[in-house]
Image (cartoon, rainbow, N blue to C red; front, side, top):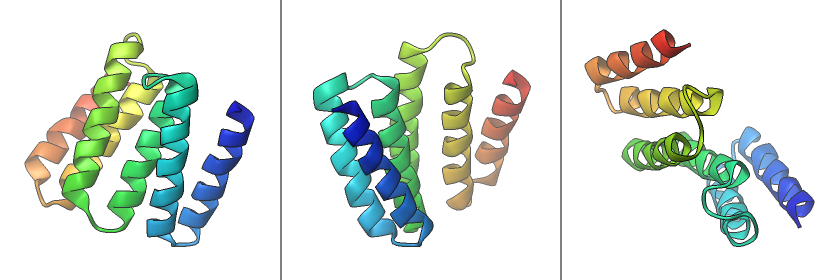
Length: 119
């Protein structure tokens, strides 16, 4: 049930906030898989889970993987949302942050500027 999955997502976020990033990633992954099955792969709540997985991966220092996951989320949101929806901009900002964490400062600046100009 979607409400049950909201609870799982909230538990994962609380675990992440306590610094247990690997466990949070696993819980967000479970939520993502369940939401794909119940809501569909492109549903906004499913994409929120994908974003949360990427953030937990980033928190573990796996910046290249986090960038890939944030990029996947961005592309899915661009396909399902109109214009410069706040979720699209949040995903773009997350991609930029992951790029920055990898030391690609010029690319990160360009992405952050793109996000800023769209707001």
